[in-house]
Amino acid sequence: MSKHIAVIRGDGIGPEIMNATLRVLDALDCGLAYEFVEAGMAALEKQGELLPQATLDAIARHRVALKGPLTTPIGGGFSSLNVELRKRFDLYANVRPAITFPGTKARYENIDIITVRENTEGAYLAEGQSVSEDGETAQSLIRVTRRGSERIVRYAFEMARRKGRRKVSVVHKANIMKTTSGLFLKVAREVAKDYPEIECNELIVDNTCMQLVMNPHQFDVIVTTNLFGDIISDLCAGLVGGLGLAPGANIGTEAAIFEAVHGSAPDIAGKGVANPCALLLAAADMLDHLDLVEQGRIVRRAIHDTLEARDRVTPDLGGKGSTDSFADALVERVRAA
Ligand code: NAI
Ligand code: MG
Image (cartoon, rainbow, N blue to C red; front, side, top):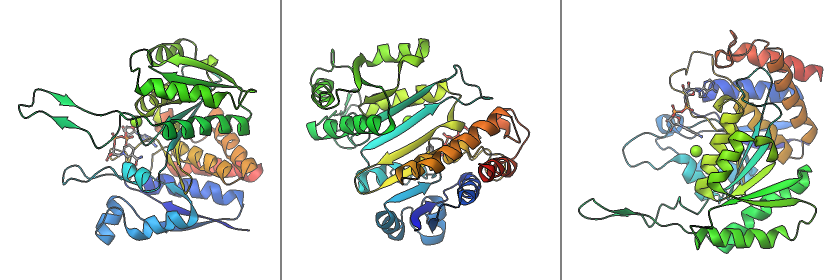
């Protein structure tokens, strides 16, 4: 049976890394079928709008999308397309794995941490922002709800159970932000009781940052609110060698969008040297989501072995290869698996 997904090639290096990623997925021969749709600058140029209805319809229809990075034009009052997509499909869980691969600039070996970040509320509300008339005072609103907290914490525990992970760390600042972070922590404690087989601990966010740098191996799954999760997931990406290897998923009940964490990299676009690994790792997470778990494992293994052998890898990893040669090396390993 074929599984259809919506594919957005994206802007800048997007088409190059998507091309490489789809070559590797095709080598799996697992019945994936693609509907190509546009968003971002590519859509603005061809269709006159950044987020065409046909793109939204395709995501809604297939419920799963693989997305290249999008350039949101600066000025002109455009809101971020990624924020827009999150809102449209209520993609409440932002899931960011950080795994060390050999042959990279990782600071530690054997790191495997998944940050589950609440993606719709907390400190990142568009509403409730104001600046006083004299410009001397600015304020914004933080909103945490029981529903928002419960569904993200439950998502983290369910994911931990499904993937056989041993521990979930709840990260908060309830000692100072007593109402908002306090509610998140209270709900997290309640939800944790439903998962007695999974260890649960609580950490304050600033201490978490220090612990991540000093002793990252104590972490397994981290669940936290929007702002803290944004920062912590980048810290974790830094621990494993940076953006070139950082995938992300935005997951809701109606749809899930898989992407690289990095942007459209205009400085190297069109040069054929972009590293396709972050998008390919996102595609591996997408395969898991589609119950193609074995195929996801094959893709990660191919990335691992290609990096370990430093076989045709791109310049950001210290290699002399191109996006295409890197993809060749990955495709060969997937075919041999
Ligand atoms: P960026 O992530 O595009 O680039 C930062 C640096 O990392 C650049 O030097 C770039 O060459 C390098 N880099 C990024 N991905 C790479 C890859 N796969 N291989 C090798 N090197 C890579 O961030 P920047 O420059 O701040 O943003 C550029 C554009 O991307 C902006 O328009 C921004 O709005 C957009 N953006 C889109 C995102 C998305 O669609 N998810 C996320 C972040 C930024
Ligand atoms: Mg961020």
